[in-house]
Image (tube, rainbow, N blue to C red):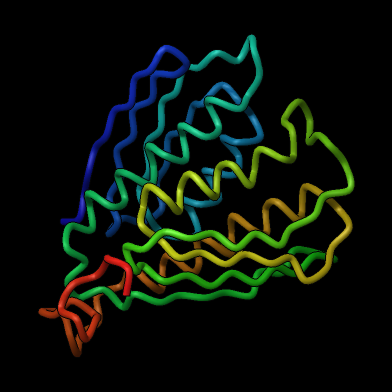
Length: 199
């Protein structure tokens, strides 16, 4: 079973994550940020990754540290659960519609982290959460998990729908990319024989 647990403790946050890449989408999320909890629940449910996240952060300052460090912690656990990434399909993509919004997500579990973020918001906040923090979460997650991640909202008006379509698109793309390829279950999906590096 591809499972991992990870704990991150700094002067700003204390976060524990456990996950199972071969789960059924069972989740238990408590970050202290209601909207982020909702998005991480969507990520678990639609990727079928079982996910437990417990976070305590300096929310009296703002939500930045907790949001970013949660992305780091989940991404690190994903990378640990993957090991050398033998047998994975590697690539995933999704067109994620939500009412008037459509977001395109494509990713490569390349172990070469990179984020392309083409998502705009018309409001600075969703509830109490700054909309600029969503890019920080995706950046932290992609970096820690070793994912080349492209996210583009093609169109949309409702900011809640825009963010949710990004998380659901990521979830569906992960579900594809993390699947074991039955035709090459014993091989790393690269002509180099290893994923990572600069080429």
